[in-house]
Image 1 (cartoon, rainbow, N blue to C red):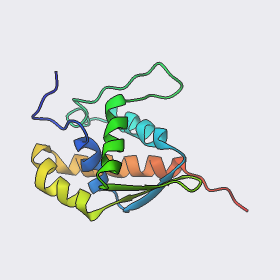
Image 2 (cartoon, rainbow, N blue to C red; image 1 turned 135 degrees about the vertical axis):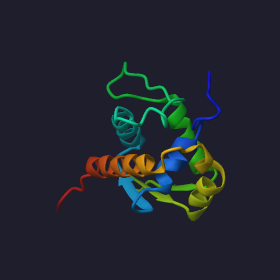
Image 3 (cartoon, rainbow, N blue to C red; image 1 turned 120 degrees about the vertical axis):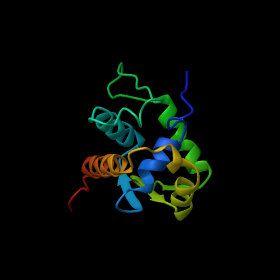
Length: 134
């Protein structure tokens, strides 16, 4: 059962992406982001943000159907722009930050912890991208 007083659907991604230290980021594929989210879910104080997000542990990497669908949804609504020349390049739109402020922020009780988790997710994604040196 989904707790509507907690983040659900795309709201977790909106909240975390709104606090990313940079609007543009790269990764090899979307599983890098899902793995980063799975890692920070184990942090103390993160449970309130991840209450409505389950991960499947059976495959090679953890997966979350809800978060994968949320990522697609953000791309379709252009709140998150995606380019894919060789790697996946994402750009967080200003509209995503407005959406967070207007609709999602009211569900966040510990904004400081959210900012910390956002920075950790960003750094994990950044670490997963290692450009090939020429």
